[in-house]
View 1 (cartoon, helix red, strand yellow):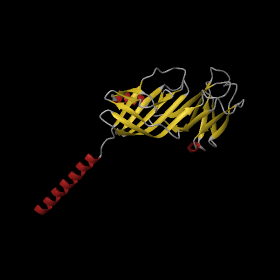
View 2: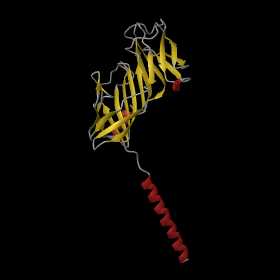
View 3: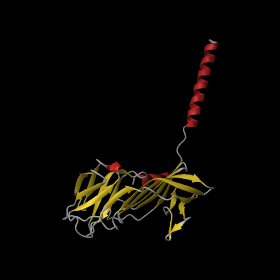
View 4: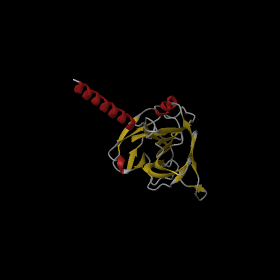
Amino acid sequence: MIRSIVTKLTLILVFSSLISCSKKDIKQSDVEYFFHDFYCFDFVKQCELEIVKLKNRDTIIYVNSSQNHGNYEEFHGKLTRINDTIYHVKPFKHYIQKGNIQMPERVVKDSVFFYCDSSLINKELSIEYLNGRIEKHRINSTENKIWINEKLFNNKQNRIYIKFNHKNPVVNEIVEIVSKYSPKRSDIIFSSEKKSDDFYVIINKNRIKTLSIGEENNESYGLKFSVKKVNSDKEIKKIIYR
């Protein structure tokens, strides 16, 4: 009986030790958020957004989105620590919306051209006009000619909202880009950059900002941003689930 009790106690201690070890091994990911609090315009569907997400101080995700200006940029990079506050950033993924201010390659009276990466082929693309009407299309290639209803898209006050299968990597929403009306019908481009410049960031307890090292044609290399740290869990949830 004594042997049985000892055996049970040994098993309890072993299991307790295993549970304790497993709890130590399970470590919450060290995630930090930095956010620029823009004014939210009531004439667009989504608020202006500039946000940085750091994961374990070795990965950075940066998103800058403005439906008002027709811009979207998404950047992923690996961080290498230089000293207590300076980190080198090596990009490995970079998406960007282009086309609203560039001259179009082709002009067709009742259509726009949507250019994208091959990863979006066979995915659905929807266009929403200001009156709420939605038209759905299929992305057939990296160059797509899309019919546009001229009655709903015919002056500078008009814009169209374009949504496809690409999720914002920081906030809980599908990316929805905007194209403003132009008589010259600018192409709509959403694609990954084949080459992005390395750059440096300074991270302290209140802010993350880019550090300009080199310049070419009076422009510094890499991204440029300066955003404040979000310390409140309540505020983080409000931003992510906006």
